[in-house]
Each structure stands twice: as C-alpha cells, then as structure tokens.
Image (tube, rainbow, N blue to C red; front, side, top):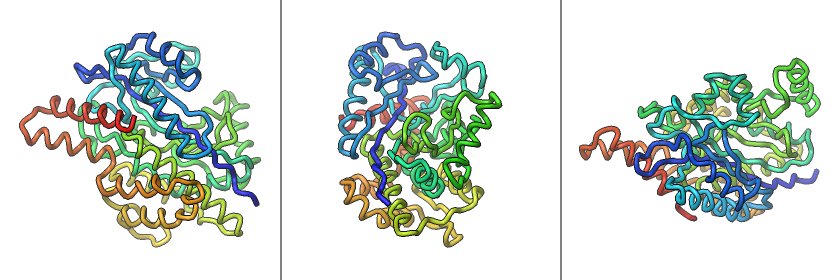
Length: 376
C-alpha cells in the first residue's frame, strides 16, 4: 500500500477589532474584504458574521509551504484592516464582545443559514482553524478518520484560545467547543466500515431534504465535501502562527503514522464514542495543563506525558515530512500553556494590579492582537 500524499491546506477564521474600544467591528467597511480579495483572490472570504473574515491556503506540499502562505494571508488581512482603522485578532472567542447586536453577512448562503438555524447560528461568535490532509483513497480516508478521532482532544487542548465569553471566565480553556455544540451534526463522527457506508448515510439526509450536501455535516473530523481530503475541524484558532503550524504538523504526522500501521496490517484501537467524548470535554475544560484519560490504560494521565508519547510515536513521520521543529514545538506549548492559559494569566495579573474587569479584558485583547502579528 502506498502512503497517501498528505498534502496540507489550512483555513483560519479571524476577528476584526476596533483598537480604540477593543470591541468587535460589528459592521466593517465592505472595502476591507474587497481590497483583500484584490490581493488574495479566492483565498479570502467573508464569514457568517461581518466581524469575521476567513482565509484558506492553497494545497501545500509541506508545512514550510503552508507557513509561507499563512504569513502572506495574515499579513494581507492585517495590513488592510489597519488601513481601515481596525486590527486583526486570531482567537476563538472575543474576551468581552457579545453576539447580540452582531450583523450577519448578506448573501444567499448565509441568509439560508440564518433562516434554517435561527438564534443557534447567530450565537456562533466563534472562530476556528481547519486543516485538510490529502488522502486520495476514499476507503483509506474513512479508515483513518475512525482511528484519528482518538487524537482530536489532544490537538484541541494545544489550540485552546477561548476561555472568556461575553466578558466572563467560563471555566473552560476552549469555550468555543461548547458554543459550537449547539449546532447539529457535529462532534465526534460516526464510525464507518467503508466509504460506501458513509455515502449511504449522507445520501439519506440529502434525499430526505434535511441537508443540501455533505458540507452541512460539521463533525470535528470529516471527509471534505469538495476535496479528496480529511478535514480536521476540532481546534480553536491560535493567535501565534507557530502554534497553528505545530497543530497542522502533528495532524499530518499522526495520519502518516496511522497509514504506516495499516501498511503493516496493524491499526490503532477504536474506542467507544462515550470515551472519546469524555476526553473531548476534558481537553476543552483543562487544556494542556491537567489530565486526559489514557483510554488504553483506563486512567488519567498528565497531558504533558501524553504529548511526549505522541511526539515519540510520530518521530519517523516528522523527519519524513520535514516538520521536526514544528512537532517539537508542542512541548513549548505545553510548558508555557496555550493561548487560553496566557489570556487568563494576563487578566488575573491586571486585576491584581488594581484594574477593573473591563480594563483587564482590554489588556487580553491587546495581548491577542500582538501575538497574532508575531512571525509576520
């Protein structure tokens, strides 16, 4: 069996912020998107809410190529936002903005979402990062999806950047996950025996008129409806570019490792959905600083130990894919904490220094804006 190409494509969703108030730009000038499109073409697009903007890299052969494109995309959006008196922020929730009063983008696609989902979609003031990995064989795509579900909580924990919602600490490192769970057809995917079984399920929903196409199935990990890829969707967006690239590299390496196992007539154990969902919740709540369940041992294990094991498992693949530095950077994220940990530390420090809660939250916004620009 040949290994899949595992080409990479990364999509990121950003927030547009007024640097004076630090609040969201709920109705940014349309020229902002027009100017970005003039430079980036189809690599940039609107999102459901006007305060958001989405970018996507072209198909990349490796992480180094993905890095170049993400730098170009982030730089362009930031430059054009600043020309309009705005700033760019890469975080999965805004520290204090409210979804109430945000305006949705007027386009047929978004108008239909608004009609179909009502308040559920209007509450989606969240941003994420999606990573596509090229897997040509559809049955292999399904097989790797079944196995890869185990590792999704680990990637979520590394990415966590949403500890606040509407100005409040939510006791979660990734509160975005909880908001997103209000949408239908999401979370951990079903287990499938074949591509044919997956197609029969999606066609049943399409024939019934419940969905127009498979793109309306929003699992944490899904076969793309447009491309021969397996699309990872569970992660928060990372302010720091380096953290985003580490998550993409780990995802790519894990898929290659699982494909190598299959080539040797082995595979990772498939665990019940309940156990996977528990780790998903623990990752969203605790991030990298506490424990997840080691399902093989049936015991709680410190996240740092689990990440060391994963890095060791994919060491050969990181060399083959030329992303050793990006994979090793996961240890740095664990040691210093994800964006969520840093946001909470900035807030707590500001409060300890005598600032009120709003002033402290504004400092968190400034921190995210600064980190979003690092490496550009």
